[in-house]
Length: 144
Length: 129
Image 1 (cartoon, rainbow over the protein chains, first blue to last red):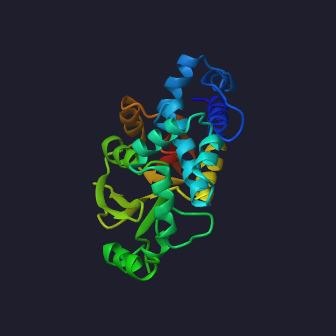
Image 2: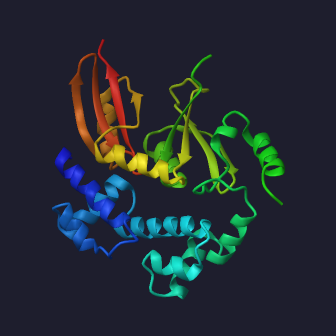
C-alpha cells in the first residue's frame, strides 16, 4: 500500500471519528481516500480491523462514555454524538456495553476520580502487582 | 535492572488479542480483568517466555490521539524481530495483513511495516548477517 494512499485512508478515518461535527457519510469518507465506497470499505477493514460503520459506532460510544463521565445528561450525550433517538442510543449503548447509559454514569460516580476519565485503574499502579494489586486498588482507593 | 515488559495501546483489547495470537502467532501469557478493562500480555513462542508485550487499552484521550498521530505519519509504535522477514511478510499477507512498507534494505537491517488492525503500525525487521 503506497504511503499517499495510506495517509488518505487515515484522513478518511479521522473524518469518521469526528462524531461531534457534521455527519460524514461513508461515501464522503471514501472520496477523501480517493476510493469507491466498495474498495474503501474493504481496504478500511483490512487496515483498521473493522468496517467504517463499525468504527464510527465505536467512536460514538467511546465519546458518549467520556461525556457521561464528565457529567453530561444522557439526552445531551445522545444528541452530541449524532443520535436522533434516545431509544436507539440507549439500546445500542446497552447492547455494546452491557448496561444503560444512566447505569453506566451512576457506576462511575462510585469510582475513583481521575482527571478527564480513564475507564480502568491506572496501569502504572498495577504493572507488577497483578491481581493482588487490583484487589488492593479496589479496596483502598475506590470510594464506597 | 532489565527490560521485562513492553506495552502498546490498542483500540479493542479482544480484537488485539486475536490479532496478536491468531495472526502474528504469539501466545497469551496473562489475561485478567482490571477495572473496566483487561490486563493482557502475549509472549513469542520463539522466546524468551518472560518478555511480555502488554496490549493496553487506549481509553484515555491522550492514548488514542497518540495512536492516531503516529499512524497518520506512518510511524510504527514498536518493532519485532524476525529471522526470515520475507517468509514472515508472505505468511502475514496470506492472512490478510496490510503492509505500508514492503521489505526494504535499511542499513544493518531489512524492515517492513504493517497495520495491526488495532490502531497501530508495527515494524518487523531482520538483522543482516
